[in-house]
Amino acid sequence: MMFTTGTAMAAELDTLRVATFNVSMEGGNYLTDAQKIPQPNTLYNLLQNNDNPQIRNIAEILQRVRPDIVLLNEFDYIAEPKQGVEAFTRHYLNQSQHGAAPIDYPYYYVAPVNTGEPSPYDLDHDGVASGKGADAWGFGWYPGQYGMVLLSRFPIDTANVRTFQLLKWSAMPGARRPIDPTTGKSWYSNEQWLALRLSSKSHWDIPVKVNEQWLHILASHPTPPVFDGPENRNGLRNHDEIRLWADYLSAGNNAAYIVDDAGHQGGLAPNVRFVLLGDMNSGPQKTAEQSGAVRQLLDHPRVNSQYEPVSLGGAEHAPNIAAAKAFTASWKERADYVLPSKLGFTIKSGGVFWPAKHQPLYRLVASRSASSDHRLVWLDLQLQPLKQ
Image (cartoon, rainbow, N blue to C red; front, side):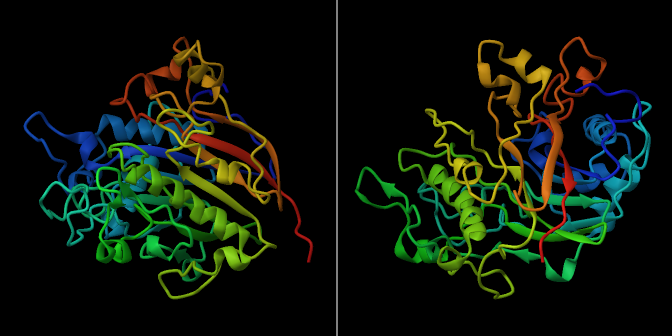
């Protein structure tokens, strides 16, 4: 997909551009030589000015692609929006980056996540219940690390957002409870298992109103299925975090266990349109490190996964891998997804923002420090009327 200064390839007037982007705007991405552990308030401090090169490049990518709705993963949670998401909009998105036209998002959604939230348990079995790192409810060195935010040009029905930050993993029927292969017993004690939260960050169902029509953004960022041991606790959690959305869409008995943070039970009604967004940390095929867990969504009867966004840069990044054109991460995998419902949408086009080396905008993705180890993914969706 080619881009020119200040604009993105034009979509049809009645077409909605929806995107997801893991922006690596978390404290660990800005460690100095003297720091060994990511520090809280790092992103907070960077957003109070407009001079950070990586954040400027992130903003420029958004200005080039110009999504109408975009989920940003790994955007540290900052409780006060004026110093967080609004500062990012004001100091970076509203300012032209390298000649690109400024962009504005008058609506956003942000909420707490499980990453870095202390648990009282030694969840990683290192002999110390530190409350940090792998002993937090979701891996993180401080509360809010690896958070997420949704930006929108269209109104968000904040009062009816459903969040699933507190849903227990053990509540899921047939949950993949990790087993310690050295003992044959559960990795987690019964007390830990009953307390452990399913979502490593959170799962959000966000209603957005576009041209007097509602759609639901289903946003999440499941844990990477690595960085554990033979018990595979992260791999199993990744599978079940993705399964939560599959059950949510299946409704009926499959969703009976799903209770949101406000105490409301059940899944998504069958007669609504939705778009699943996020870094799923799962490739579509089973490999040595991947379970193929995202197939629970790609093959779901309510999901339209037929259109595969691609890029020249991805194909160039791994020329000996046929699937590379669809990669969304520098570590050679399709990990980030925009998956619309079959109901209520026609997919018009899409892509992955990964310019080839000979293209001028390659500078925005030339290294992790340039922007992120992930690439922005988008689809252009034409809204279709729903049957009453």
